[in-house]
Image (cartoon, rainbow, N blue to C red; front, side):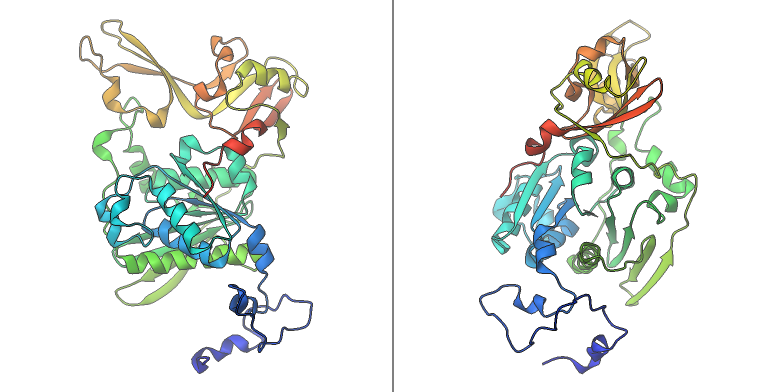
Length: 410
């Protein structure tokens, strides 16, 4: 029976009624329709959910709960990315993992189990790093991104990617039995970076050594969390995504904080920073018949139709081209994004002194690197790239990668 304590939801100040057609007869319930009870919600549009695309970043405790809820709701297409494998410690906090899944990629296992919950849906699993392995085209295609992350670096990257293509995203963080959920809607709301403090930037920089390479000894610590708080915050994340897909209002740029010890919620509004580095939005790109296997030269040939003068390819991810020892002259080609090069690699094998990383953030037309494939320069499949010319910039989507960029569907 309905709970009289929540009867206020039936009042005019409750959830908005978006239907223009007559109200359904609440007594007519199709028991063969798995969504029949959901359809009784006045503003519910199951067809919107079936057509929706959602990117879930992270398949840990939060990601498991998010994927479970998306499957129950019948979200048509979900993409999930995670770099890690299932470990025994995941089994106490992750509803989709089993003991026999040990050593398997989290994204693939979670995708498979979500599909078992609801065969109507499609889930694409990608084992990788959201910073280096997901092209901007995917951020552009989805309706909403849901972050299930545990570090500032990945959150900041997701935030900037979403702002470039005007895709809303929902973030959550958990620790012990505390949690926070925040919604960001570009281009006008405060964003994740707007709320970052000087200490946040300092902690972010601590992940890297003096030569700007990642330090192994400062890996993110294991944050203690309970499965209960993961369930709660993930449910709120998906509920915010549900509202975004339906076009319902959300409190963009605000934090919803839950104190699990006192059982108290409170909200706070993030400041909007006019000088925020994340507030860069790209125009609609040219869909180029190229992929990340194409060379820079081939990209420049396409860009030449819209741009004049010498051309330069801007790299969103700083590229370490080589490691060079200033003491003995040892040198080794690297050709990997900076975030994928560890400090331990920058030790000269000859004299054991620190080597210096050579990095580039752009490829000019006369560079010998123009003959290299875009993938060799750290550009992932289905990315959106910027080419600068004498009279402006052009933005190009590597459209040939569209079908192959999403990982296997289950």
